Image (cartoon, rainbow over all chains, first blue to last red; front, top):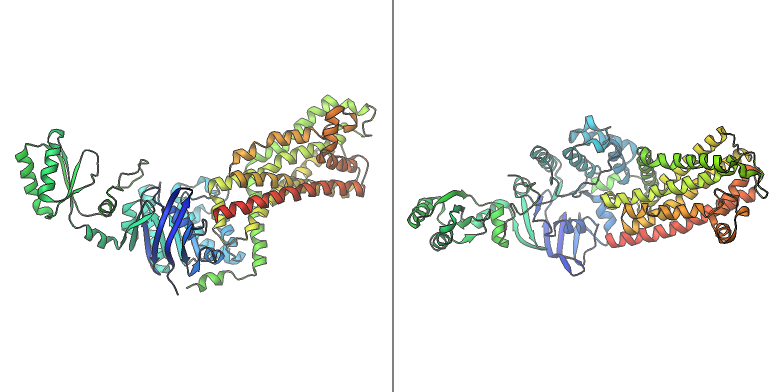
Length: 322
Length: 272
């Protein structure tokens, strides 16, 4: 059988705007695949095409072995979908929504009841099953959403920004649930996220998308290795900042996009051993260092290296975890 | 690996579609029932207006040309019901727009549900509310000395017509909701329904109207439906009056359902 998700030159235009610009992807069976990128990069548009909610403008995609356009009904039967901003009817109870979802997927009433109870148990919502969803917390809604997407035991599960807006505790609970699902049931998971940590924690393989194009893909550890040098980030007094920047870049490595405004960041080619030399240089220049930090390569560095921009702190919603 | 998913679709597609429609209808009925703030006005306000009309215009039954009624309430029942159903009917369309706004519609579309079950399930909710309104209004009016002369058969026709009319209004509202995807746009059609019911025989006999108003009211299909049902209330069961009322409601429903279906297809094409 073909891979659970395969795309070839997938394109989606909205008028003049090219939201997804020739995406080639292969997600292997049993994989947790992380699709990482900033807001508006084309993650959700890609997922919407893969889940038959949007027709591609060009290219092709197969999900669970079916073409997303020509065999859309078969795709819908095979996938579980938990979209961003989980739209869950607040007037219904968790139980009622699970049963509705089960019927929509063609399960019998008896099957629906058994399956619903099992899933509620699994996501820890048994006690809240008969309460209206309107009374649920954000984390509970996401867990219910996850349960809903699993009603028919899908072969591929699409999670579009599953933890956006969740508190750290709920986020970790959901991560654990996704890991367990993948480990115990072998479900292939296609996950989109704008959180580096989420991609790092969950995904065995990631693709970074920016402005509709995939700029990097591979295992997180390997991608970080490719970046190589750790990032030295310095807060230097404004009078000496430019001079120090020039000298540091000339002697120790190439400049990287700063993590915070006013900071100088360089890839320290010689690693931690060079920190004393850096300090000595700054001392010779008479510069005052307000803050210094040496960071091991992260997915943010991978992103920065590929796009020239930082993903971390790029959001204004402040929901970014540490 | 695909065996798990194909194994779940155990029953025949048509049986599935029926079960899906029923499940969605149940959701739409529950959704409305659980929001008294929405259905309560559609039940209570028309009754209030009827009480005021009855106090203000009660003596008009003595006017020459007024139908021979036992009480003004007997005359008002059908008009009040029509008003209630017209206002209640938009709830279905408004809720569909809300589903689109919230993203629940997408959740449905991403599942293997029969496409038309989404629409039919929604409108079934409207039909149930319409029938419920009819039962309540008939009961209240009977308690206030406005019995239905046509007996159980007339009662059944009135309830059925109310349900079909609710589908007609719901279909129009759903079409608008599908077109705009905005709950607000659907609710803005309220004044249009207001005109539709006031320029009709709902609250006064057309025979006693004058000029353009009378011509407009006589040309309004809602008047034909009301006059048919009113005959069942005032005079007794009459097959042709019953059929006229049902035919008007069904005709309107056919029209608006065509509109809703067209908009539904259009939205699915744009999205899927």
